[in-house]
Length: 202
Figure 1 (cartoon, helix red, strand yellow):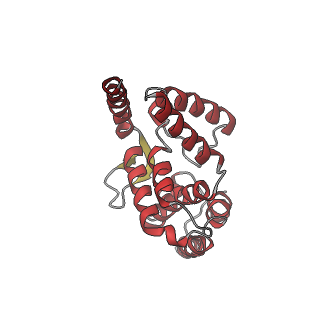
Figure 2 (cartoon, rainbow, N blue to C red; figure 1 turned 90 degrees about the vertical axis):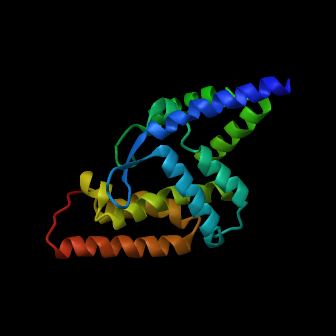
């Protein structure tokens, strides 16, 4: 039984290696290339480890890190859907749910069920842990965009108002302190863009 469980776990680990090939829109800070989803998940786990004291409510850092390590595993099957893509959220949710069932189903039954439940908790933002994980999933790309002179905002004609709407509520409900910093940086970025005469539609 133990040997069989180990083989299932190894199969799962081999399968999720494919996450390293899922390319996101966000660039690396040196802008040499786009980041992949595995790098994004690792980076978010580091964000959680270092920033959890800024959560509005107490969080279980181990659970938050676990959520962030698995939150994008479904992209092995469905790819990355950027926040500014305008894709149908209902269709995306259905596809990702099916992917989660398949991927976590590769694991031993109880382990797979536990991780699936954790992924679903993240998706639903149904706990303080999940809300903080969701907040960090917004913080990281926002900071990347500011640090890369607009990054994906430029590519998608994203305005300050769109940033405030798409990032603000998710971050602020879990960490007002982080949102205050992020909002300040976003406003400074768009003020600079305006002063330089760059027009952004939207």
